[in-house]
Length: 180
Image 1 (tube, helix red, strand yellow):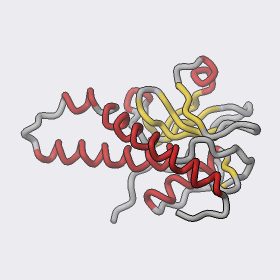
Image 2 (cartoon, helix red, strand yellow):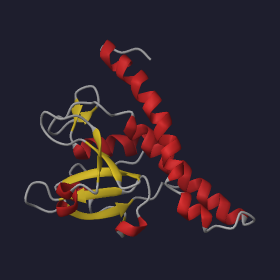
Image 3 (cartoon, rainbow, N blue to C red):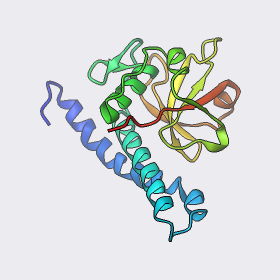
């Protein structure tokens, strides 16, 4: 991988090792669900594998963005990302899916998901600017999500259990993988 920015190559190598760890973690996020599925059911097993693949693809791509600096309106890792820019970039890279520009607009895409049914790859929305759906991140499993926080920050993983995020949670959406 060649780049005009040598630091991007170094960050890529670091992120790749983190992405491998996340791929393992995203598989663990399905532990409870996999116990409920009979191993002899090939349809159920196929469904579980598809969910795990979906989660792994999105999670690995998102984890590759850790450390990218926040930039308001940013939509490319080289120049910086804002929260919706991160989500748009990941979904475009993994599935070729174009999403709307703002977190509020993205909140109308896909289907609503209850917090008890969150799966890796789902989108989580927050009210961080005194208006609903002003912030978005990608759920990773184990009540963790990845996002581009704010000016001066970098793409990072946060716990949804922190009181700041609990108080500002607006809901979650699931965007289905496009048909191939």
